[in-house]
Image 1 (cartoon, rainbow, N blue to C red):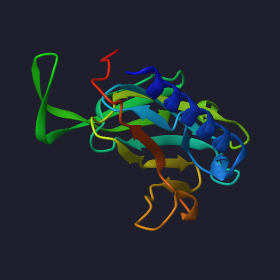
Image 2: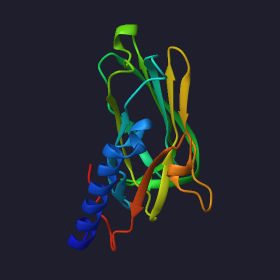
Image 3: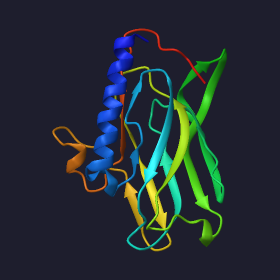
Image 4: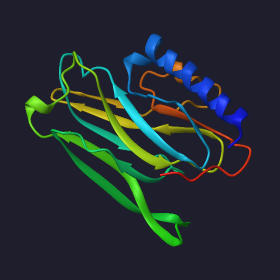
Length: 186
């Protein structure tokens, strides 16, 4: 990846992080870093800043967007993990193997009421995945299930809409063209 591309990614990450910290992004689930180079490993940290009103979060469900490959969640103490896999319409090759199924959903569930994310607290739910080869925006639908109620952060903007126009926006990730073959890092 060129130095110029790395500078663009770093600048975009700073801007989107500042927007997430100081803008309206704190009202919903967002990604810590909202840009990534194409065809590179990406660490997705979903920032959960509140529950459902005063009700604590007991479960976080993340749907893996089309094009993101090989998702692997980070375990959280006090939370169980469920990883749902499905057959791929179009298999791909990774490390010399044909991949015919992949992760489509990851669910973190609090083991006990004491493990739940209280509404007055903040936490992150993390996974890694390989970004798509093509530049563009991918949207990560996230469902936040609380002891009373839920927040479905699943809306993607339609043509002419901004993410900020949506009531329950999905977490957005901008995939940037790297200008050449990206490094394949684990």
